[in-house]
Amino acid sequence: MITLDEFNHRKIKLEGLKIVYNDSLDTAKITADTEKGKVDSEKLITDLAHLLKLKISPTQPTIIIFYPGKDRCNSSGLSTPKSSFLDFKENEKKANKIKQSNILYLYKSKEGIKTINKIKWYKDPKNIIENTFFHYHYPCSSYVILYNNKYISHFGEFPLSSILNDLKTIIQ
Image 1 (cartoon, rainbow, N blue to C red):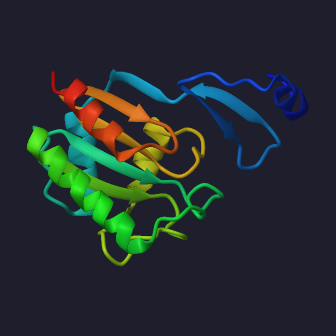
Image 2 (image 1 turned 120 degrees about the vertical axis):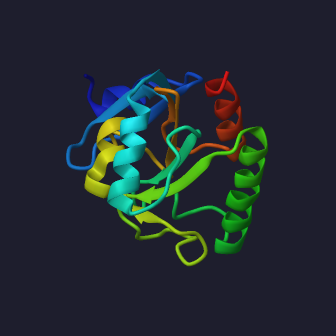
């Protein structure tokens, strides 16, 4: 671990990495911006469905958009509630054309969610998704795709097209 001053002096800029700041300590971590692995996706999806009182098919890919709470990244920019809503809905249509999918919007803290009145957001029950995939507060929001006991997660700000690319990858 290095100090924040050392980190800033190094000016590290590498593709595929994110800078993650700890909520309570004055530390930062350099981490990959994506992760792939294995997980008992059927159990995870079944648990989520039970806790959220939703019908979610464990045999379909499940795309989870995770909002960590208000930060500098997701509280700035030019998007409006309407443009964010339209972008999410368009991406849902595109994802379902690739493969019919479950799409969930989960949050840790709902403060600052631009689409809170247009899209059904759910509190991450028992912090299942945060504790399983998002160990840090990654800026803006993140996502994870679960399918056939595999996952692909993306940490922090992302273009919506990356969800579609990762969906194509995970269903292969």
